[in-house]
Length: 196
Image (cartoon, rainbow, N blue to C red; front, side, top):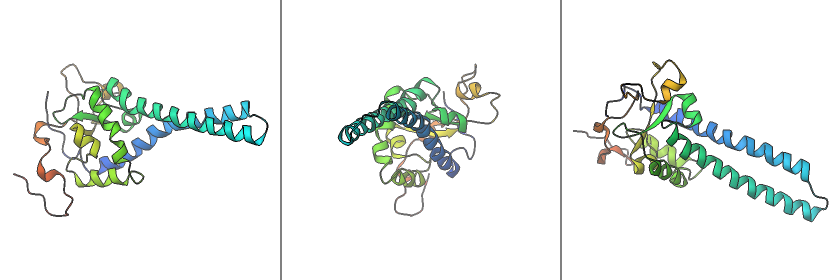
């Protein structure tokens, strides 16, 4: 199943939506973890300074581990099971698809998330720079996984319809095979792009 994306669906505006989406997905995981940590500290605070410091270290490490697992769940498993969309992607009408327009397998969602180690370097500036330099606004994880984030069209009547293909298999704004990664896609020298 292939098709070409509607004009302007993979443009600079997608970068802003992706940044907001990442922030919302992180807050969706972090805020409940923070509230849980505060509740645990308030309810089970030990007496004595040494015991309190040790207790706070354990709570902090546990919170960080749960945040990591929660973020992995929201950014890897959830989009695999929900049409290529995290909860925030669904709210912002974004979707992850393969370059041929198909739904990515789980391993590619895993690769994308694993490469957030690279894209998240320098507080995410590395990922933004890579998105600005690629034709389809892909971060490094997308380039390696051969995926692209596209906007879901407004024509969908409901949020459920936007997240799943219709009876004819139409996924909305999907990338076509003509969007395959070429040598001119990544422009780091500031020069002109030359396409055939």
